[in-house]
Structures are given as structure tokens and as C-alpha cells.
Image (tube, one colour):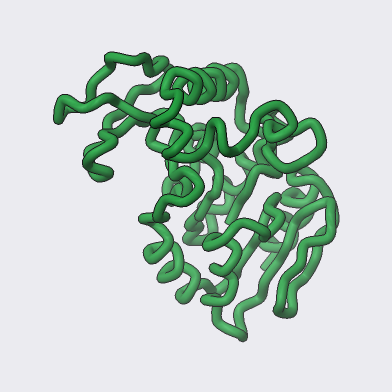
Length: 220
């Protein structure tokens, strides 16, 4: 399970750290459906900026090493990130909990999703059902459609790894409770991460921490 910390070293702004995105934007103004209804142009431009930032960034060594783990393991990634850096690094099984910047969707039918790639979304851009196209992002207060598939993946995990997430955002933070008690768990993060079960901490940034863990896992 990965969070903002794994993409920070690629230059993707995090939300919660000092000088993160929430220092410049109020969550109520850009990441709720009420904000979108109140000022759709502001919200669309916010995500257009995030999309431009994404395509100026590249996967880092942590992303690449997780992709290389597929040489020996069945690696399934659950990410809270809305970027596509895991995919660009070569990972083939990625489940996005909070949506994807490279996609848009109907505001009426959440299952009507279209690829937009690097394109901006503007007022007047329409989904296939004729409604205004919106970012394919799970905003605060909205349901997380992929939480049940993610929980099912956790229940089957033989090894569980948490990288670069504060474990403070629910329901994602609760996924660790679905992992079997006997499953080895690793947490890679430079800061203390509160977890309610026994884990092996690798207290480092994602690139160095994943490199350390990668070496251990490839030796087994």
C-alpha cells in the first residue's frame, strides 16, 4: 500500500506535510463535491495543474524497484495516489483507491470513466452521457468504490508493505486490519507511523527504504 511519500521524491507535492498542497489550498475549496458545485472552474484548474505537474515528473527508484519485485513475487499495489507513476515504472497490478488524474468521468454516473491522458478538463467538456466531465477523483465525503476489492487483496496477502503514507486517512488506513495476523508487515516511512499491530519499521524515505526492503525480499 503506497501513499504520497513514495511520489514526493519524484517532485509530486504531498498534501499534508509542511509546504504541502493544503498550505496553499483549503480542502473545502478544491477536494469536495460542494466545492465543485460552487466553483467548478477553480476545481478543474486545480486538477489541471496537478496533471501538468504529474507529466513533468518521472517514476523514482522506489517505483521501479516495486515493479522489479514482480520478477519473483505476485505484487499487487494498492495506492492512495492519483498519479500513474507505478504504471509508468512497470507495475502491472495497481488499484487506485482515490481515483486517477489521467481519467475523467461523468458527474452523474461514476462508472462512466474516460481516459484523458495529459489533457486539461475545461467547462464544456462532456462525458459520453452528455454531462460535464469532472476529474476521476474520490473527493472528501464521497464513497471509495475500490475499498472492498482492496480489503479482499489485503486478506490474501502473504507479505504486506506500507510505503509513504501517514495511515491517517480512512477508510484506507483501516486496510491493515484485513491483513492476516501471521502475515509479515513492513512500514517504510521517515516518520513514525501509528499502527496497531506488530510491524517491521524501515525509517527512511521511500527510495532508500524500498531499496533496503527489496534487497531483503530478493534474498529470500
